[in-house]
Image (tube, rainbow, N blue to C red; front, side, top):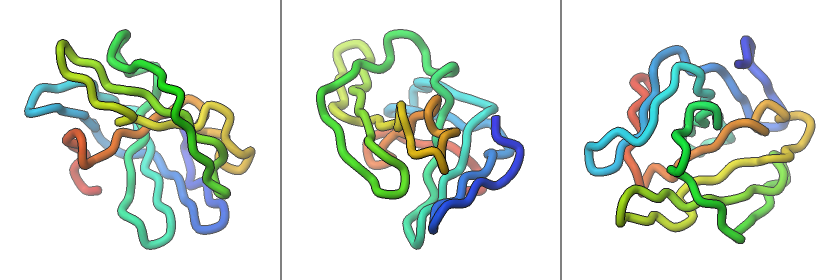
Length: 121
């Protein structure tokens, strides 16, 4: 867990001070007390969840990737819950740029595909 603010270019990463949850149609998929808040420019804040708190079998790796000049190469995962598959619904930076190295063990969910419950964000 990061204790302080990490800032690089217009990216800041801070600990989320609370309990954050991810839900799908009201059903909790996962939760964490160790999430991070990433703010980048004028974009809405995003919650990044530690991989250690992601239940086994929830994520399935995909071949999709993208590149961010501020964070590095992103990998993507499908969310798999029973018969429901949300394709490329989760991304993370397994080998992020050194300035945002804390992201190596975290992933974020697309908030238009799941409900992110992180009061105050």
